[in-house]
Length: 194
Image 1 (cartoon, rainbow, N blue to C red):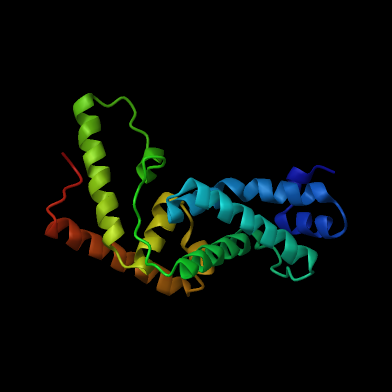
Image 2 (image 1 turned 60 degrees about the vertical axis):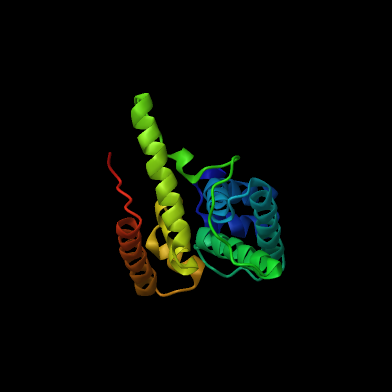
């Protein structure tokens, strides 16, 4: 039996019945998206690594304890666990998080530059810098949705699941975030084209 051909739910069932490789397969399917999500939220590779490991441990512990009952919704369930771990981390830190890029990781580095001229690259870098600054000014609930939707490329349905909001609320927050970004662009005289 090829594990790659099975659904997440089937793999979890196999794992519960003693097939350790089945859990490895299901986690392997979603690890890149999970890690990207954590990097985008935390802006710190070491902290993202820690939260990633905490998420995987929590996933395994929950399944082993017989508490996994999400049918075929493994990925959003795992993302919800990661989201809660991040929230717990910041609650412990008792500080409000502002999104900043670090020297180690830049959100916009995932967007390719192609074969741009030096001048075009400089303009693009300035636009990305301006956008990062403006996204950081958004209220946390709006900023989080922008990061998940635009940079982690998560569908609204998954974002709603992860943030524990209704789908309509999630879409509404994205609309508000875009409106706020437009206002911030005007207020700070930021243009997205050269």
